[in-house]
Length: 134
Image 1 (cartoon, rainbow, N blue to C red):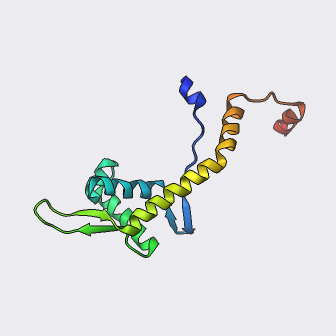
Image 2 (cartoon, helix red, strand yellow):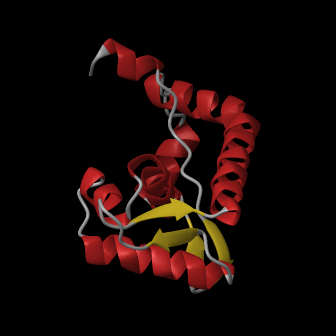
Image 3 (cartoon, one colour):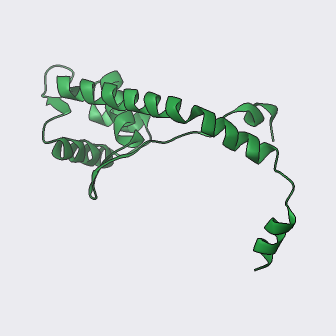
């Protein structure tokens, strides 16, 4: 195991379940950020090694879940169309990233403790051995 991985904290991945069928998580947020950077759904999908159909389905699902557009398509023109985040889409990404930072900050000490427990396992006690034997 490389030395740097001994010091790295376990990571927290945040998914927000709005209801059992509607979720916003790191993949959708990363796609929105990629659309913002690349200027199109297809370029964002390629940058994430994702098909255009998959990228479009995720955008469509995000827009449907949020009941408003996070991404607006731009039509034609000399260089073809593209896509941009709407003001709501920009705010959605910012809010998700803030929630993510706040959650990571809130659990930082516990992640450190978990890392230390994994790196330095405590010797099992007689009681632990009894539990394992059952």
